[in-house]
Image 1 (cartoon, one colour):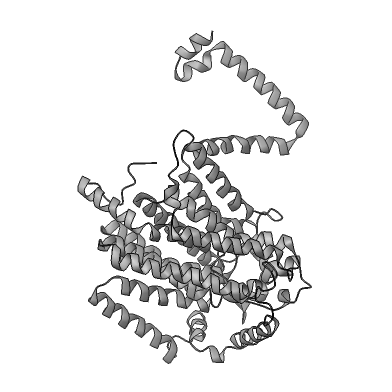
Image 2 (cartoon, rainbow, N blue to C red; image 1 turned 135 degrees about the vertical axis):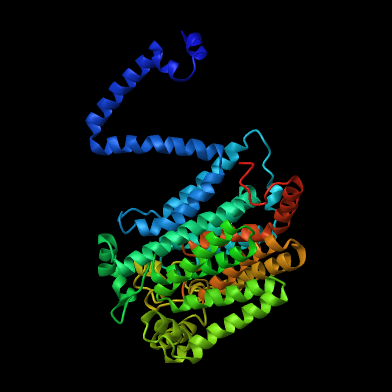
Length: 497
């Protein structure tokens, strides 16, 4: 009977008596289980089927895990407004672990090329993670649980994601797919923001605003747009980075379809940045634009870009044009911090922290400040002093030793990427694409001075994967040239993984 079943193909197998009997028995068993367990069990079985299919595909194509991580980085925080009480942020951790396991299973009979991980960036991230682990034993820390939650975004995610990317996400087609994936979600983010601004909030967004969000997102009676991000600050900085990255991509890539798509996404992303009301996001396109212009290595581009950036600065810093528009007026205050009451409060808070941390070179412990501090140790000193800046939070939690180490790693990545693009990559198109990624990264570094955006989602995941491509610059160029010799478009998705 089994031999005859093997001989049949397609739908004919479903007509075999053994298959029909198996389906009949399985139906009875499932009906009995659902009858006993109720609706929750029925829903669990419905979810189980696509989950099995997803895991099958993931273990065959681990690259799916990378795209799943990017997807959850964009939507997880926004979904918590609709699905309350479920720690969806941990789904990113789960996906990273699953992807790592999938890589090992996918290469079960093949040797994994661990030489790809013999990179300076991996060692630096390992050192940073080791320092974060040592912070677990910081005697100043009031909550070890807070350390677990806060440490993930600070040092665990880059340590897991960068090696994963170097192993399985390091080809030209991956770079192109990454850019398209990022562009689509940036476009959706702006559209969601426009819906909030011009149509209104839905029930979940309104509930979030009424319970916790209004204090920071209603300024002078105006709503700061947050889209499906954690807050307006993250939305504004992320869209500013997307705007400058995709402007650079549009200028770099050939073909009118690429140019139209990425220019459109860039303009829409900048629109999203403007409606967010995040003044600190202005530094993102400024620094990013300067970076891209320099890396272009073209005198005309440098002159044109320099003049354009100068005109934008003069417009905001020395004119009152457009002050009747709330968005423009609020953005203009970023160029006059001495007149900004909130900025003066930040300066006072930093003086308070300076006095408190004078005898604490290793800080007050990871998770002791910011939202995690307010959640797990609200009685702590650091939990009751606003840090605002990413760097101030690193300083408060990990001390001046941690801040110096962190800044060294961030700047090392900047200068090494500059060197690779300027001195090693000879192809202008690829060099400009990588320059756009570096511009976005530098812009976020600047924005992190005023807001804690660097390690938050989705910006953190996007930056870590950008590092992968920047440090794979020479490998990407070799592939680029090989494809040209073979008559294959460098940005083709073929061959598939």
